[in-house]
Length: 427
Image (spheres, rainbow, N blue to C red):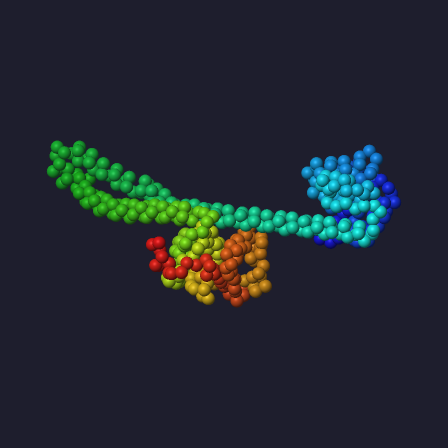
């Protein structure tokens, strides 16, 4: 913030005093406005706020003390610093002004150097407070958007779960429709007609099966029906096995959802298991998009101290980004996930053979609200922020456009529990 951005209100009923103080304020680079009475000052501040008020005490109708009291009673003006500038020079008057909320007291006649110093001091303090408030506002906005990204990640996991359940249920519905609408009804009707024919001809069954055309063929038909029913039984068995498998899959998906709901606290976790679960939760989408997921994990990794739900969201965000990156490839759509230890850091990488990233774009795509697609632009920013807040490493590398990309994430020793995940799993 520059000096000319700040405005000083000078309140004095003496035009000569206004002129002198105004020229000094202008000389040191600040803007100023003036009022020749307490009423004018209050009316002006009803419409527009200023950054500092220089206030005379002895004025007609409403004195400076009363003006100060009224300003401190208003929410809009109570934080504006007030300096009393007055010829009333005694300890009691100064103490009264400071008790009312003034920040300083300048006696008339004043020396220009002292006046400049006092005004500069309080305006510099005001600039610092404004800057601090702006920083807090930026931080509040940033945190709010990060929280939205976190919520979006949770919603994304939930939406993905519902999507996977929908994909799992669809074939079950088709199988049930087939059971209800297939040829079984015709088979049952034909069996009934054969039974009725036999009932009608039971008095002379020999003649019926030897002479009647329908009777002659009935055993052949019944043989075919037995074969058809056997085949139908096999079909039913296959269908019900598929349905049973689907129900188990839905149960597994729901278990994932409960297990990875954002908890807000950190626990000892096996990163490899989380990576496998994230990949499993994306298998249906991978199959639909024709993407092959290769996983190579170091089974001797130590455990990681992490919020399980949030690291899951990070991994899912990155997998989905890779899906988008390879979506335009005609064939051989692949992504690869690795985990390993390196220089006391626990790393995992997610690489794809997709559209790649131009070198000058790498830093841009992880900035606040930036996106290469129609998404909110918080996904990569949230991932980077989550990792770096834990003093971790977040890197994106790409040889260039159409040459794929790799995201590398690592967590330092302070977030690692010594000993392998495999050994600690039962703890």
